[in-house]
Length: 227
Image 1 (cartoon, rainbow, N blue to C red):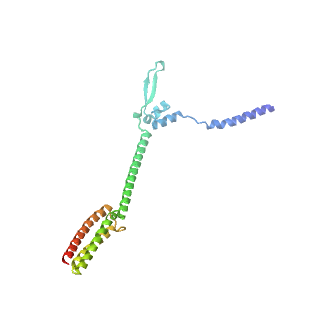
Image 2: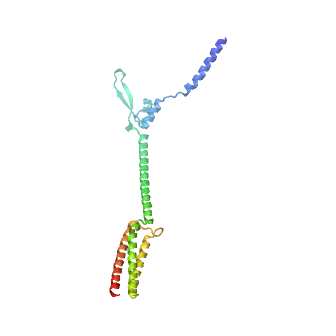
Image 3: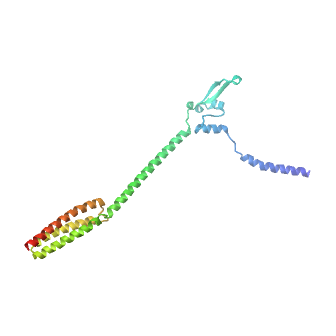
């Protein structure tokens, strides 16, 4: 009797251990699988076929046809997607995803374009706020200014002040020119200017200064001759 109870207990424990495992076992539903595949991108097929033929013919596209197979000949059911009054979900999803991808590509392209414009504007701002061309003209400007200053002083000394009018006239023109150069050389808020425009202005002012040097040399020559 004791052995019998022991066997019953062991059997009960085995059944208790096996039951949860059986309960957790996944169940494969072939009918639902066919329905989902038909709605997505799988073959257009439904099951059970006669059930869909009689009750869901409109959206399944079910049609009856005769199939000759000897003694097993009879009517069978097949499903035509083009006869269905519904459409697959997948094409809509594909179009939606493609539209989203196109939007993302367009947004990325616009972002890159704006970023490029921003970089160009930063570069232009930096270019306008730093005079990179003055150093190329500074040496010549200083040399010509020394020539003008020395020449005008020589004229005043040689003529004993008698050429004061001519000297003051050239001095005023030279002061205006130097003020123009200083203005172009200024940087910061209100004085932004691209270096290409600065260079063009310096070239023009160089020509003006060369003209003043030439006129000063001519005045020096007159002082040597007449005084």
